[in-house]
Image 1 (cartoon, rainbow, N blue to C red):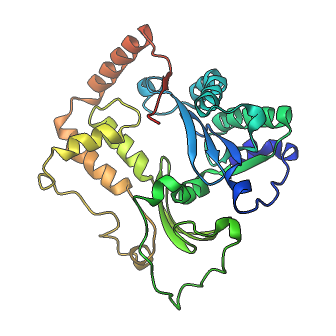
Image 2: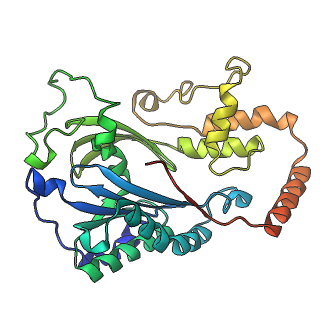
Image 3: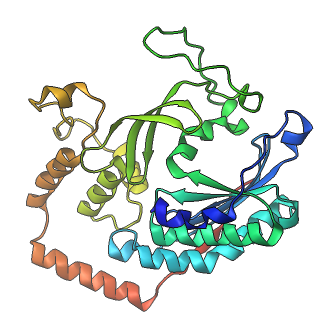
Amino acid sequence: GGGEAGGGQAAARVVPPVPEGAGRREMLVLGIESSCDDTGAAVVRGDGTVLAEAIASQVGVHEEWGGVVPKLAQQSHRAAIDGTVAEALRRAAVSPADLSAVAVTVGPGLALCLDVGVRKALSLCREHRIPLVRVHHMEAHALVTWLPSCHAHHAPRPHPPSASVPQAPPPPPLLSGLLPPFPFLTLLVSGGHNMLVLSRAVGDHTVLGSTLDDSIGEAFDKTARLLGIEAIPGGPPLERLAASGDPRAYALPRPLSRTRDEALRSNCDFSYAGLKSAVRMLLEPQQPPKKQRKQQRKQQQGQGQQQQPQPQQQQPEQ
């Protein structure tokens, strides 16, 4: 999806180096995110302080289909993008003319959805003649710990140098004091992505392991559907149910623990398909016949079409 969304490269220009001190602090960047099923915008100061944010949720749009429908998601993004960006700017008491740059997710993600955010970002950059910063979705997740709001709660313990891990060169002044320092290891479990990443510098990452089949998010959603949970995503309600359950009630396999493939046992990859299949086999004897379940689902879809919910603006606490 990132390749299609990156079609506006010619309109972007390189952001010049930012000096330490007041210049860095006074930067104002608008961030736009539309990679999947929520429209997000935030205004961030140069020191990483989030001044304001706004989110338009698509809760209620995709439940009857059992997953995110790209075309419906795109339509919802188009309906929400202008209002979401305007609300983030309003909450931050910032006008578009005050912005130093606009950052936007260009991938990975759903191409139809990414296109909405990229077009909005390009429009703002052209109108106000400011730089466009293209953001890699997964790299942004890995580097979000650099935000000041994360430092107070998750300050990492210093680790001694290791001969087996190449030591990163001293960071440029703009990156000094950020936590954690390079190199560091990140476990990314975001939606359809599930990977273990070694980060050496901005733009310098090595994927040590990924999922061989489903991601953990997909496994949660599919298991939730098997249990009759219609909410999208299915993970939160499933986790709430699990909190009051008995972890010893059923014996479920540990992923890859029984494989005879030594390469799979010793590498950093993940697998959740076997665990998901084990849950399905456990539930099938307790469920009504497939034909009856299909009829029940059609009835539920018919009821949902009579009254379709609209995306709601969420107002997170500041």
